[in-house]
Length: 151
Image (tube, rainbow, N blue to C red; front, side, top):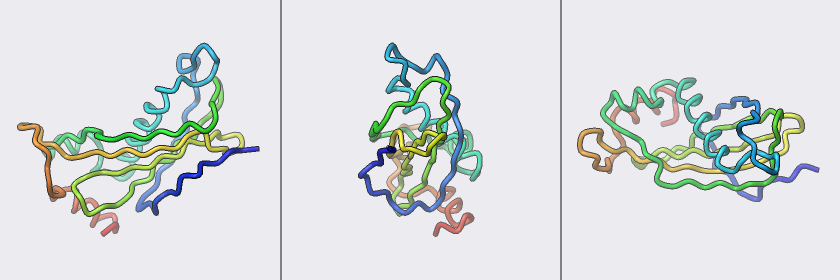
């Protein structure tokens, strides 16, 4: 029987899913995905999200003069994934009026859609030149949200 997270998710403004085939190099001595790989799966989901929705990918953000470091990361392990299985990483953009980017994640085992892990990341905007945190949402970020009908 599939176990499900008790976490209550926010209403996402945008969602994107990708598939990842679990490789041998990603498993540990117990023959399950090493815990650190889930963070990489989140990253893969964010990158694919940025490509799909344009304007929120790392190159574009850097070209706008910002970096977006992760300042908070939550990860809840619910069941292991094994070598050869396919995971579906659902990346959910959560809108906020603040100068930050929030994503929630659900990682499913494709064969039965059981939830393997859930998580959340918080990123802030820092200026490329000075490293200072941006306290107001950058203009390009507001425009991106308007163009996609989020605000």
